[in-house]
Length: 166
Image (cartoon, rainbow, N blue to C red; front, side):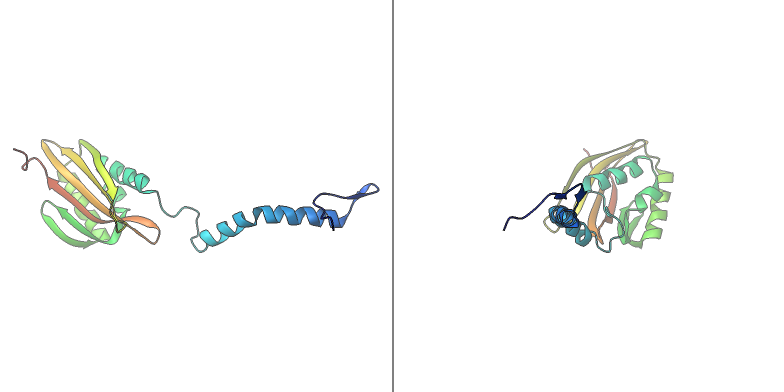
Protein backbone atom coordinates (compact mmCIF):
# COMPACT_ATOMS: atom_id res chain seq x y z
CA UNK A 1 0.00 0.00 0.00
CA UNK A 2 1.38 3.38 -0.96
CA UNK A 3 1.85 5.80 1.91
CA UNK A 4 0.82 9.38 1.35
CA UNK A 5 2.98 12.16 2.69
CA UNK A 6 1.53 15.26 1.08
CA UNK A 7 -1.81 16.91 0.57
CA UNK A 8 -4.39 15.09 -1.51
CA UNK A 9 -6.91 17.15 -3.32
CA UNK A 10 -10.38 15.98 -4.05
CA UNK A 11 -11.94 18.53 -6.24
CA UNK A 12 -10.96 21.94 -4.88
CA UNK A 13 -10.55 21.01 -1.21
CA UNK A 14 -7.78 19.41 0.79
CA UNK A 15 -8.81 16.30 2.71
CA UNK A 16 -8.45 15.95 6.45
CA UNK A 17 -6.49 12.76 5.83
CA UNK A 18 -3.86 14.68 3.89
CA UNK A 19 -3.53 17.32 6.60
CA UNK A 20 -3.14 14.64 9.30
CA UNK A 21 -0.54 12.81 7.23
CA UNK A 22 1.44 16.01 6.74
CA UNK A 23 1.33 16.89 10.46
CA UNK A 24 2.35 13.36 11.45
CA UNK A 25 5.42 13.46 9.21
CA UNK A 26 6.33 16.91 10.55
CA UNK A 27 6.04 15.73 14.17
CA UNK A 28 8.22 12.68 13.46
CA UNK A 29 10.92 14.92 12.02
CA UNK A 30 11.06 17.11 15.12
CA UNK A 31 10.24 14.54 17.80
CA UNK A 32 13.88 14.04 18.77
CA UNK A 33 14.39 17.77 19.21
CA UNK A 34 11.24 18.08 21.29
CA UNK A 35 12.15 15.19 23.61
CA UNK A 36 15.75 16.35 23.98
CA UNK A 37 14.59 19.81 24.99
CA UNK A 38 12.02 18.52 27.47
CA UNK A 39 14.25 15.97 29.20
CA UNK A 40 17.52 17.87 29.09
CA UNK A 41 16.14 21.06 30.62
CA UNK A 42 13.46 19.46 32.78
CA UNK A 43 13.24 21.16 36.16
CA UNK A 44 16.04 23.62 35.54
CA UNK A 45 13.80 26.62 35.13
CA UNK A 46 16.11 28.02 32.49
CA UNK A 47 17.93 26.86 29.43
CA UNK A 48 21.43 27.86 30.56
CA UNK A 49 22.09 27.40 34.25
CA UNK A 50 25.82 27.55 34.15
CA UNK A 51 28.31 29.62 32.28
CA UNK A 52 30.97 27.68 30.44
CA UNK A 53 34.19 27.39 32.49
CA UNK A 54 36.04 29.98 30.41
CA UNK A 55 33.13 32.41 30.73
CA UNK A 56 32.91 31.94 34.50
CA UNK A 57 36.66 32.51 34.81
CA UNK A 58 36.34 35.69 32.72
CA UNK A 59 33.53 36.99 34.95
CA UNK A 60 35.46 36.26 38.15
CA UNK A 61 38.62 37.82 36.66
CA UNK A 62 36.64 40.94 35.71
CA UNK A 63 35.41 41.19 39.31
CA UNK A 64 38.95 40.88 40.66
CA UNK A 65 40.26 43.38 38.08
CA UNK A 66 37.61 45.87 39.23
CA UNK A 67 38.33 45.15 42.91
CA UNK A 68 34.65 44.28 43.25
CA UNK A 69 34.24 41.77 46.09
CA UNK A 70 30.47 41.63 45.55
CA UNK A 71 30.94 40.49 41.95
CA UNK A 72 33.52 37.86 42.90
CA UNK A 73 31.45 36.58 45.83
CA UNK A 74 28.53 35.85 43.48
CA UNK A 75 30.58 32.82 42.47
CA UNK A 76 31.42 31.64 46.01
CA UNK A 77 30.08 28.31 47.19
CA UNK A 78 28.14 28.36 50.49
CA UNK A 79 31.47 27.71 52.31
CA UNK A 80 34.78 28.95 50.87
CA UNK A 81 38.39 28.20 51.77
CA UNK A 82 39.85 31.69 51.86
CA UNK A 83 43.60 32.20 52.12
CA UNK A 84 44.62 35.84 51.91
CA UNK A 85 47.04 37.90 54.02
CA UNK A 86 45.73 37.80 57.58
CA UNK A 87 43.10 35.11 56.91
CA UNK A 88 43.37 31.37 56.42
CA UNK A 89 40.20 29.44 57.15
CA UNK A 90 36.88 28.23 55.78
CA UNK A 91 34.25 30.98 55.79
CA UNK A 92 30.58 31.31 54.94
CA UNK A 93 29.92 32.99 51.59
CA UNK A 94 28.88 36.34 53.10
CA UNK A 95 31.78 36.47 55.54
CA UNK A 96 34.27 35.56 52.83
CA UNK A 97 32.83 38.35 50.67
CA UNK A 98 33.35 40.88 53.49
CA UNK A 99 36.94 39.74 54.03
CA UNK A 100 37.64 40.05 50.30
CA UNK A 101 36.06 43.51 50.28
CA UNK A 102 38.38 44.53 53.12
CA UNK A 103 41.37 43.13 51.20
CA UNK A 104 40.46 45.15 48.08
CA UNK A 105 40.01 48.34 50.12
CA UNK A 106 43.51 47.92 51.63
CA UNK A 107 45.02 46.77 48.33
CA UNK A 108 43.41 48.63 45.40
CA UNK A 109 43.82 46.61 42.21
CA UNK A 110 45.94 48.27 39.54
CA UNK A 111 46.15 45.27 37.23
CA UNK A 112 44.99 41.66 37.13
CA UNK A 113 45.38 38.99 34.49
CA UNK A 114 44.77 35.24 34.40
CA UNK A 115 48.02 33.50 33.44
CA UNK A 116 46.85 29.89 33.49
CA UNK A 117 43.60 27.96 33.72
CA UNK A 118 42.55 24.37 33.39
CA UNK A 119 40.76 21.44 34.91
CA UNK A 120 41.65 18.36 36.92
CA UNK A 121 40.60 14.74 36.49
CA UNK A 122 37.92 15.09 39.20
CA UNK A 123 36.21 17.91 37.29
CA UNK A 124 37.54 20.82 39.34
CA UNK A 125 38.37 23.96 37.40
CA UNK A 126 41.16 26.33 38.37
CA UNK A 127 42.70 29.62 37.37
CA UNK A 128 45.95 31.27 38.39
CA UNK A 129 46.64 34.95 37.92
CA UNK A 130 48.78 37.91 38.85
CA UNK A 131 47.36 40.88 40.74
CA UNK A 132 49.27 44.13 41.04
CA UNK A 133 48.38 46.47 43.89
CA UNK A 134 50.72 49.37 44.43
CA UNK A 135 54.21 47.89 44.61
CA UNK A 136 52.97 44.51 45.82
CA UNK A 137 52.39 41.69 43.37
CA UNK A 138 50.05 38.90 44.43
CA UNK A 139 49.57 35.43 43.04
CA UNK A 140 45.84 34.64 42.85
CA UNK A 141 44.49 31.11 42.64
CA UNK A 142 40.88 30.02 42.62
CA UNK A 143 39.45 26.53 42.45
CA UNK A 144 35.91 25.95 41.18
CA UNK A 145 33.58 22.99 41.13
CA UNK A 146 30.30 22.60 39.32
CA UNK A 147 27.57 22.34 41.94
CA UNK A 148 23.90 22.14 40.96
CA UNK A 149 24.84 23.23 37.46
CA UNK A 150 26.83 26.30 38.54
CA UNK A 151 30.59 26.86 38.56
CA UNK A 152 31.32 27.96 42.14
CA UNK A 153 34.55 28.95 43.89
CA UNK A 154 35.57 26.41 46.53
CA UNK A 155 38.92 28.01 47.32
CA UNK A 156 40.39 31.46 46.80
CA UNK A 157 44.04 32.06 47.58
CA UNK A 158 45.80 35.43 47.30
CA UNK A 159 49.49 35.30 48.26
CA UNK A 160 52.19 37.95 48.27
CA UNK A 161 54.28 36.99 45.25
CA UNK A 162 56.90 39.75 45.59
CA UNK A 163 58.57 38.20 48.67
CA UNK A 164 59.08 34.83 46.94
CA UNK A 165 61.15 36.32 44.10
CA UNK A 166 64.98 36.50 44.44
